[in-house]
Image 1 (cartoon, rainbow, N blue to C red):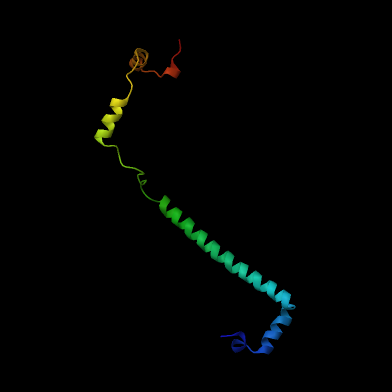
Image 2: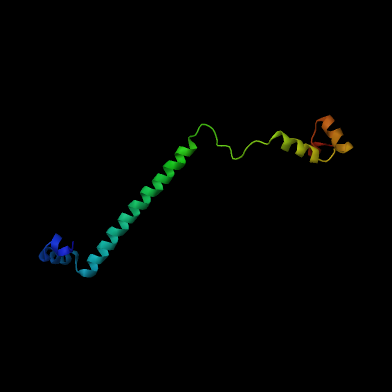
Length: 102
């Protein structure tokens, strides 16, 4: 469907004259187009904010990994270096090396 079928030629000419000429009319159309684009972007950003808000309302966090199995824990324990006598002494005293004042 073309423009002449929707509106008579006289109405289109009157619209162009009221707008101040073809260049002004084109500027108006660009402005209207920019408004539509901005409205669409604001709706999309509002949807994204709503999704983030819904995710934040979850009662408990989603775990990001599975807990370690017994075999994995045993493997880590066996791979650990033995404690030095100094470390054993510090653990027995219950202080951290940074906190020891001699």
